[in-house]
Amino acid sequence: MKIAFSTLGVPGMPVAQVAQLAADHRFHGVELRAHPTEEPVHTGLAPRQRSEVRQEFIDAGVEVLGIGSYVKVAAPGEDEPVLTELRDHVALAADLGAPYVRVFPGAGESAPAGADAVAARRLAAVAAYALDRQVRILVETHDSHRTAADVGRILGLVGHRAVGALWDVMHTWLGGEQPSASYPALAPHLGYVQVKDIASAGDQTPLPLGQGVLPLTECVEVLSREGWDGWLCWEYEKRWFPAVPELPGLLDGARHHLWRLLNESA
Image (cartoon, rainbow, N blue to C red; front, side, top):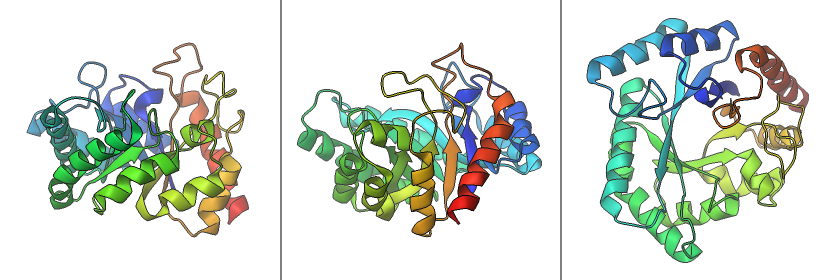
């Protein structure tokens, strides 16, 4: 497996610094959070700027794992604004050489069956566009569709290889699923796995990996046992918790912890 981190841990950091940070701490890749006002990477970048971002990572020997968008595919409302956002983020990922775009369900209070149908319709409408650009759209286990079973309902309706799942281990755990149940539900669709650690179900303050309550050992054991050979991406949500320690000082410890889990489960 390969390891990455998300730029949620270093909000607003210039691209060159992010790439060098990953290289210095021996991470294989980075998930880039895309935001038009808070981040240097977003869908408003001109072609020249996109080329420069891509080159920064190539020069550092670091992969751009994915684009962390905030598109909500099951959100109430008209389809077209969502479809436009999806296409724009897919195009950004393709230009940066990233294989994945993260999206949220975001159904709010909509009834599950209706939300599933809305999300599936929108994802199916953009699937061919994504496939042509060698990008997969990944629905994260999150908010209205917290568990693997929830996201699996959407993906079963779509049935297209350009649309898959991002397994956020915290959300499936908060939804009452153990890794041994989450993995089989997501396995046919799995793009990559997002790991993190928190103090408790009631206190989601981010902690260094291995210092919280999330079932990271069980998750890696399941992945290894099943022969899954994808990406583990550490999401340290400093953007929402500014008082927590800075990410750069935690990267070596995170890398050691992930490699220990991988070696022990091999």
